[in-house]
Image (cartoon, rainbow, N blue to C red; front, side):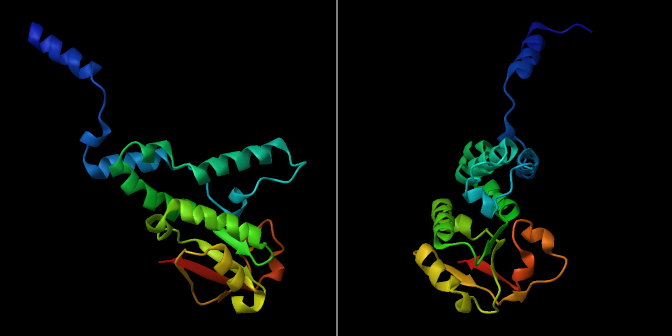
Length: 190
């Protein structure tokens, strides 16, 4: 079967024209974008601080990757307003997992506070895995409440009811002396 000149031209235009992601149904392009961001690095408490001198290059490279994820939204989320509105809530819900031991100083809380201000109020509402660790049931007994109030001034948050730390959750505290901590208090942003 032979093609006419017009059909051939239309065929080449179709092949040469760029693929337009947003021409797809919304559900499809959001799913494609989430798959593309599936390996987005986790944001954890270590993301805020460079490794100490003498750490091996692999740890330093991991820190640099986490720091990029922390301070720069994924390029895909920066392509257009629609993708940003769909992806950022998902990113902050699925990639942020921050445990803050009460042994961390005010400086650590200030760094986290700077990041919380940077991502903005709407995105903070999607951060669901921000937890404070304490050896005492009440954070007030460990001075964390006052430290957080100073470091996070201007950020609206509330502490949930403390939960006891359960045996078997040691993996959560791989870099801490987990036996020291007895209580986990979730932080919610309003």
